[in-house]
Image (cartoon, rainbow, N blue to C red; front, top):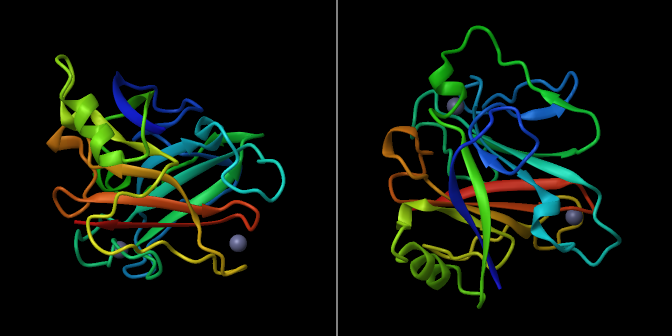
Length: 217
Ligand SMILES: [Zn+2]
Ligand SMILES: [Zn+2]
C-alpha cells in the first residue's frame, strides 16, 4: 500500500493537519529555526501529523502523538547545502501534539523566505502496491488529476532519484524510517525548491525523537 498525499485545494494556515505551507505549530517558546550555514531564518515547508501514517513506524513501543515540522533555508537558494541531511541548511523537528501553538515568525525577515506562497491542504489516497513512482503515475493520470497534484507520500518506501541516502539515527545508529516524501508542489510560483523537479525525504527515529530531511534532483 502506498499512501499518496494529494492536493486538496487551499488549506488553513494554522490548522493541526498534514499540510504544506502556512505557519508551523510548535510548543510555546520554540524559536523559529535558523540555518547553520548562513544563520538566517529558514522557510517553513510542511507539517506532518504522524498519526496520519496509520501505523507505528517503529516496533519499539506505541507511537507518541507527534507532528513533524520541516524547514529549509531559502535566504540564498542553492548556497546553504539545503539538500543535505547533516549540514544544517534544513531542519526537521518532532513535536508532541499536546499544546501546540502557531510559531511567531522572526520580525526582521521577508515573508517570502519564511513561508511558501500557498497553503496546500492534503487528501490521503491509498493505492495498492508499495511502488510510489507507479502509484503517483497511476493516480496522476486519472482524468481529473495531474501529476503535480501528487504532493508526495506518507510512510512507505522512499523512491530515490539518486542513490539510497537513508539517514542513520545519530543516537541509536539505526536506519531512520521514512515519514514523508515530498514533491515540489502543484504550482511553480508557490512550490518548494528541491532544485527543480527534485523530491525530498523526511525521516525520523521516533523512539529517539530524532529527524532528518534531505532532497535529491
Ligand atoms: Zn542559509
Ligand atoms: Zn534512534
